[in-house]
Image (cartoon, rainbow, N blue to C red; front, side, top):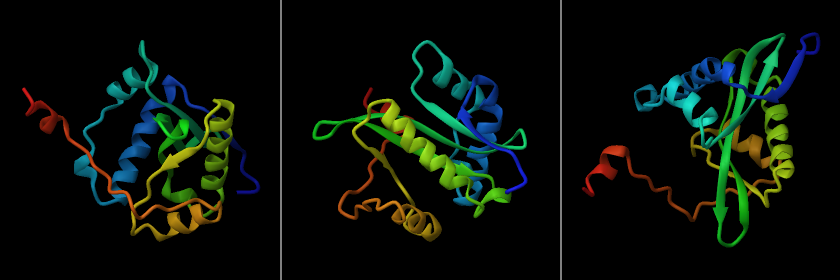
Length: 159
């Protein structure tokens, strides 16, 4: 990548189609493409509508989108405002070349710029390369907490 031009920048509404393609690529990597219910239209509304709920950074190589980090705020009653890194995605052709490091560090800087008191994210227990990557930063990997969620269909059962 030394001869290629790399730029990390804030994502724009024009980046949504490429960002969604990265989401789909990640879903394939995680063997769960059937789990993606989101759409580019929903991402456009959720990221750039009246009340945006996420932000993202784009990694471009020679003008082509090669990765992104998508984040939002969460609030910890114990720690205060924290940046939650939902996904750090680098397209397969650029994995292992340092682009993830650039995106991750830019996301860390974004957390500081936004006056966050920390950053949190999840990593699948089988994704050893990602776990090893995060350990290089001294990240705490918590084995005590269990992730919980309800789908839209489950939420609607309350009616």
